[in-house]
Amino acid sequence: MITVKNTIDAPISKVWEFWTLPEHITKWNTPSPDWHTPYAENDVKEGGKFKSTMAAKDGSMSFDFEGEYTLVKQNEAINYVIADGRKVEISFKQTPNGVEVVESFDPETENSEEMQRGGWQAIMDSFKSYVESAT
Image (tube, rainbow, N blue to C red; front, side, top):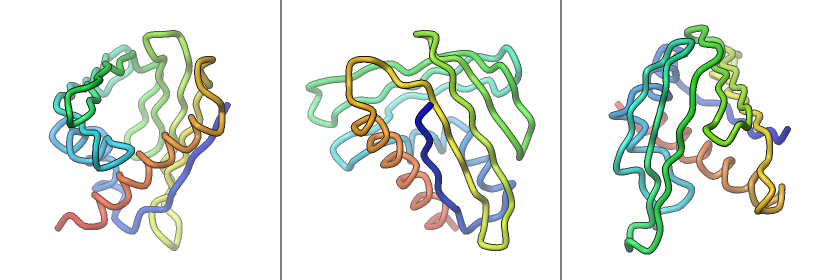
């Protein structure tokens, strides 16, 4: 698995809310300013499904990211299986410096692991910036 992580300077309840609610997902789920997430739906429970659309702002490309939750422990952990069968595990842990979010995922085979790590880390960094800048 590939792992990315970040420590968010915010209460764990806010980190959880911003990670899981569609109205927040559409604000932070982007690896760079030229991409965005115009659509997100999320049923955060074991057996619940999620779907978001990530798109280039210039309209040149878009794709759906979807799957099903296999584990949900509020403010602690989320595991899911992406539609292509890859597994993702996310943990949320309160530390003295904030909430540590650790996300591990099975790599796909089209892009290098380095490229995948960079993309997922960029999205994690976008999440950190969004949460910490929200009032």
